[in-house]
Image (cartoon, rainbow, N blue to C red; front, side):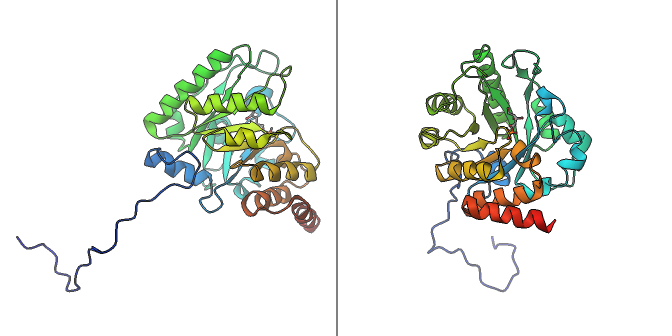
Length: 293
Ligand code: R5P
């Protein structure tokens, strides 16, 4: 039976070239399904292998944090400069323009406010709503060593199972109780537990001593959480050290949106993360952009 193909040009089956089998650029993610990889590749830049996520989910437990009183005024103008947003579905629906063309990680846990025991969280979103909102990922707090440690770990594993059903990656955020020591030993434990139990991305804090042992012993990408507002040079230095020591980017909030010049800070962080710009040079860039404004 002849093939139904009238094209006169000879076919080329490239029989002398072995078929390409694409790998995947992101640490520990090579065996994930295509949809999950595709979502992760929207968040992590395939060229640098890193991401600059903009976190503005703080209101889910602390209300209108400084800098987030009017998200339409402070976050929406800087959001196009980041690689991905990290926010709640309430803010996404009410304030973020749907044509923003930036992937979104949605906060999927909640419950207690700053007035109560923070580790007492529950899963706070159906996976169907994450799909409806076209989320590229979902994020959840995990309180290793906290009062409700087991529940928060179980919340995460249930969310991972939901995400696996639909190809949506889960970012586990290692939350540290006020009274707990923030050192490499603690974060090695917390990050490794979250990865072993299925989280595809881990968000954790930078520590000046031994951060490279945290990234090294965690088999999936780590993004650095920003933490409280620091002078710009300190924040840029922390981000620089984090990626030089194995982090796959940052998920920063206050150090960007509480800066005197958030867009300039975003540009400087982008250079540090994606182009390995040194902190002093990034500060010079920040000051130049700030003064231009
Ligand atoms: C972590 O607890 C929450 O996701 C925070 O709302 C957010 O990550 C904080 O970002 P930053 O510490 O950089 O302000």
